[in-house]
Length: 287
Image 1 (cartoon, rainbow, N blue to C red):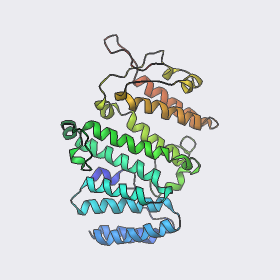
Image 2 (cartoon, rainbow, N blue to C red):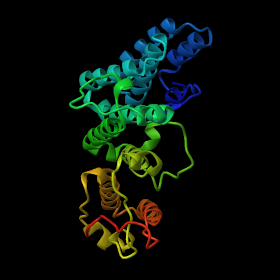
Image 3 (cartoon, one colour):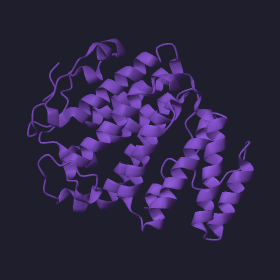
Image 4 (cartoon, one colour):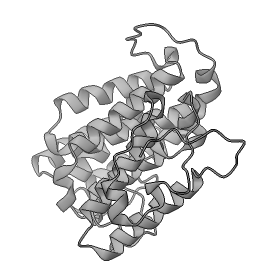
């Protein structure tokens, strides 16, 4: 659970803006080990932030409140994920996309911490359980994929929202605003990180994925954008990565620094998936 506490949120309190007094009270309650008092402060911040449409503060307060509720219940991750599911269903539209990505990242962090146990679980036919402790590998990958897909389906309005406006929610990185200008870009990059993580995601695939050196993945931008790859269902995550790169490149057609950044990352990923040995399987992507 410690990983989850630091994921997607500033792990150190930073006080700035109209809700700094509330965040200071929250931090004081946490330092005194008074989780219920901290939750009370978070509820107050959340309500005020939603009323003022300060979505980063509302998201931050919601996330901390859910994590504290889970910690009080001895780190029940299923409670955390299911409580966030309710927040997504009942919350304002402006928060849904970010909350879906947050949920996907929390599930992924849980998988990383418990991957050996998860990989040893037996699949259950028509399993609809909300208890993460029963999910096998494919179910976990499917659930994470579904959260990212829902998030990005709702992310269109965030194309015009500067990433800097969410600085109270996100840990500051070293990527210039010119190459990652919006919250939309940030959410897309989080999804790409998941779909490209071979050591985790490929474990659920039944076939190898290897790109031939003549693949459109290595081609000039125009040819890559025209590519419509097909692959077995077990390699859906690879198709997702290709599609997300295409969407980002289209989005940044008129933003040269961002376009170059995405294109370089695309080529680096393609190189890591390249077919380099006759002993390896043939590429199963069709062009």
